Length: 435
Image (cartoon, rainbow, N blue to C red; front, top):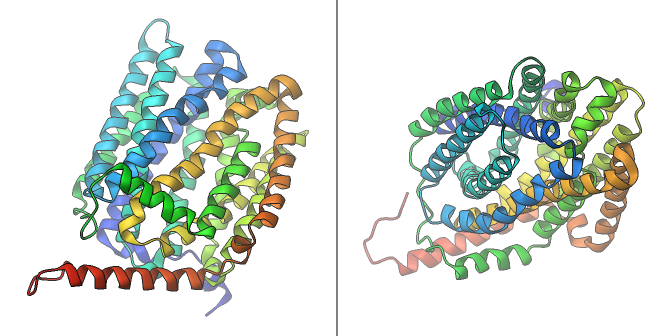
């Protein structure tokens, strides 16, 4: 194998029809959603001028998410996952329409933005676990690293193009046009999701209940490598997620016209890793890789906060984005290669809490810290605390530090073989084996 092919992005999952449809739908939807993601904090800044108010968006989003992620995970293990994703997309489209109406009235209401943000987080608690649980069913286990890289690629394209376009639109047009554009992308996504074949729940799927949710939590607690992925990411995002301060930091370098560049710079770093991600399939110390990447994320954020020029600030975010991508790739491989399918939805709900709780609370932390230390100080100290916390977690989680992906994959295969044997013993004589 040539050196070029070792590092090239693996496109194998795109040969599969349903994966292509889901990939296209998610890519278009993500692109539009990233435009709105940039616009809401900017609109709040224009309306209130208070960084804490912008930061409180994370708290408003977290409250419904804490409940709905468990509900969504349990539903994803019991229902057709494609239908769950389709109707969640439709609900998010409806909420975007409300953002458009709020922007069109004479005086937009701040409370409307917060209510819609909370409702969107609740719907996301249904959408993401179903989507995350559906993806491993659209490609074989040996292609999960490639699936992770491709999913990251679509996110990165959305995160580069979406915020860049949002910055241009915000600087030149009313925000209503931004929300209208996002609404149009949902129409495309819904058509694609509608063409995907049903993704049936696992055999003998357990009806959603408190008992089924607790079963998922117990399984997660029994796996030190899963606990490690959750804690390391929460630590990194809580202390070093500076997005709530972007509108103020942008004022230092040119205002709204450069705001989108900050969002895009993180995605550029991620993209550089993704397009050269062929090497990740040959790394087996996944826990160590996640820890090193989380520490590097913190260092990139420190550089962003200390920068005295726009190009250096963007470089810090590129470094941070690349590091976060490496962490995300290996966390995704740990999840997708080792969790049994009948638990995948519930564990996806827990994963969702881990990778969204940190950023949501991190926004509030950044807003509060900015009142005490200023915008740059809040960013720099957050990065320093992220690095220190990552080191502490490495010392406290030796099993995660030593985790080898080959052992995890072998355990999943053994668990699924044991479950198949158990279900076969319960199946009536002569009954066909489910596909």
